[in-house]
Image (cartoon, rainbow, N blue to C red; front, top):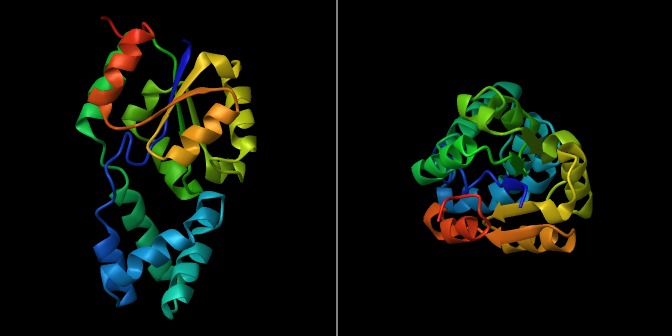
Length: 199
């Protein structure tokens, strides 16, 4: 096995805790806000500008959003998704120290992608691939082709880890080995079996 390719959200990171704060900005409850936040997220992950996304969320809720509010929401949203899972960080360190080639493939907006590239932990990855920068997203066939092109590797040399079955299925259709993420501890036996972690 060559490359280990990680998803980001809820694999390397913890789930954002910012939704209640976003809801306050819109003047609604979190229960009202969350469905709108996720319903229109796909376009944002495919490169939609920040302002257009937050206005689309607002349209779902009947709330207008100006540029200043959008900027504040974007900053808070990025911050909310930057908290890493400690167990995932330990695993990353072990893999990086062992010389395992690591890549990141995330459905994420361009503003978030730019911030991730500035994080010290991102240096563990040889390639960082974000849907917002490509204009395509998991599980589209095009994103796997773009990933493999960047890695310069055949699909069979990649193990992809994601917390969503639809993305795991998409990776497998593209010829990658893929596993559904259930935590760092749960994937360790598979990585030992592949020889990328010591037995």
